[in-house]
Length: 156
Image 1 (cartoon, helix red, strand yellow):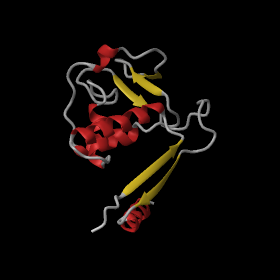
Image 2: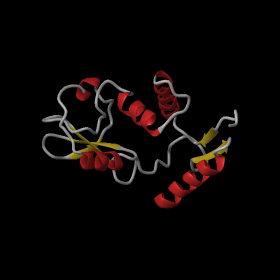
Image 3: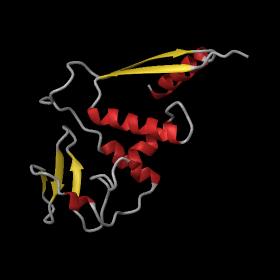
Image 4: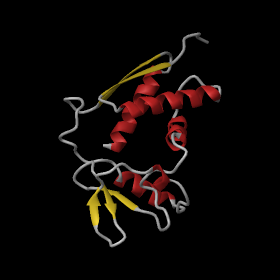
C-alpha cells in the first residue's frame, strides 16, 4: 500500500467574488464533518445555508413577484396591477422574510434555471468567458480524470 495521497487542484478564471465565499463555506462544511476535500454535498449545503432567508426568486404567498428578464441579467418586478417593470431600486430585506411556498424538486430546479442571468454587456469583469481547469495527482489520478471527462461528455 502506498502512502501517496490523491489530490485534485482546480483553477477557475472569471468567477464572481460570491463564488469564492461559497467555496470557502463548502470547505468549512467539509472540514467540520471530518473531510479534507469539498464534495458536491458540501457545495449544495453551502448554497442553501449561505443566507438566513430564502432567495429573492422563491415564491412567497401574497408577496412581490420577482423574475429575471429573459435577455439580460435585469431583475423584474410585477406590481399588484400585473404590470412587470425593471427593478430600479434596492430590494428591501423585509421582502425576503416571512412565509415561503413549499416547492417540489422539479419546480425548485425550474426556478433555479430560470434565474440564471442572461448577458450583461455593460458588466465590468473578465474579458473572456469563465474557464475551469484541473490537475489530479496520486494513485487514483487516472480514474478521477476519466470520471471528470465522462461527466463532461454526458453534460455536453
